[in-house]
Image (cartoon, rainbow, N blue to C red; front, side, top):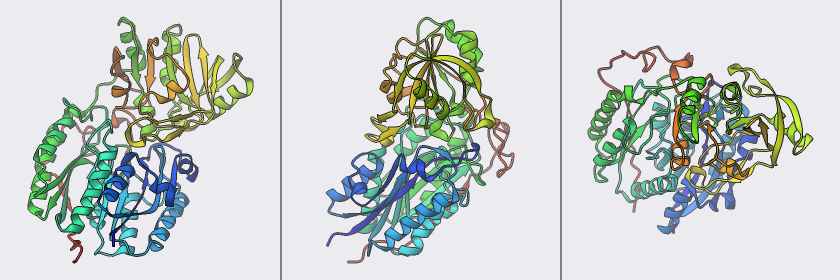
Length: 508
């Protein structure tokens, strides 16, 4: 009889500095899967899990899986309802030999600060200490002592931009196979230091300060001893205690090796901290620098409004500067504003409208601007991701319009969506090659999306809940002893958290 592995998860990256909350509709608009629909996943982390389990003769038992575009913390009732459904499905699944979960690691709910730790604890209470729980996480995870206590193996993505989702799912499945066969006796150690920086310099392709840690981690991996080494560049937009980056090590039965390797690599991580801190420009300065260059596109990276980090996507700070300085240069900028999108659809193509735009969803960070524009395109906003964590998945911008002010094209959508490549702009047939300026609102993925055509990229200093410089945020749950807020801080040793050992091998 095949061994039965329950597969599922709740996957979202949350932000404590935006005023919006994530509701159930955000998941229903994205992925909310059970049964055959879940088993049909053949891309991303879940696709990798199912592929390897099935090819090794295991029975994949679909539990519950929900994912959504990053956003504010979950409404308490939203998390409770999904958690309840998850646990009911485990109860109804019969005997399970293992649990394999696709989680993010930066989830939070209004009633549960540590979403992943809480979910793992609830699952553990049902399945007991004899059933292995293996989870995969984004490398932008906040790994807590509760999470380490409840699960047996944690494997994080190894690339940023994230191009190894399927492979990470395979790694997760292999780990649970190795545990059940007795080849892996997992002991985990997570070493952390108080580095809370944005992802601007967090690429995993050399050269780079985080890439340096990832390269060394992979060099040291040895399946017989150091089963998996996972550098963690923590999601910095969580206002939680004990936040920090570091290195997670999964050893094969060797607690000392796990601790010492985690500590050694985390000290190296600490030594790279100044290189992790980005250089930023005000929008006006970046635009002037771009105008001094021949051709385009010049990327204006307004990372403080990153939908992929939980921001609303409704900032118009960079738009104001473009309108003031270079209104007759071809520029493209995305803004989330459902009211403006709906108005454009109501008046129709080629019509001129006057409207307020921006800072309506999350007004803390700015004020709307009054514009007069011409509607040049209308769309239902439905597109398909190609590659990455949501490869093949449909994205829903909702009612979407392109409005033109002078030579500036404003892409106005109703819903925030994650930026991977240039799928949203391609849906609207926008000519990115001819643009002098393109405003991008993701701190990393623009590097792959535009690497063959961009002339330059400038990281902007603007207000928002996902700023390039984390010193712009007011954390209330951590002390002031963190980098880069205290650039002179020194540490003697990283904080080390360890997992709970369990006897998990399947008895013959």
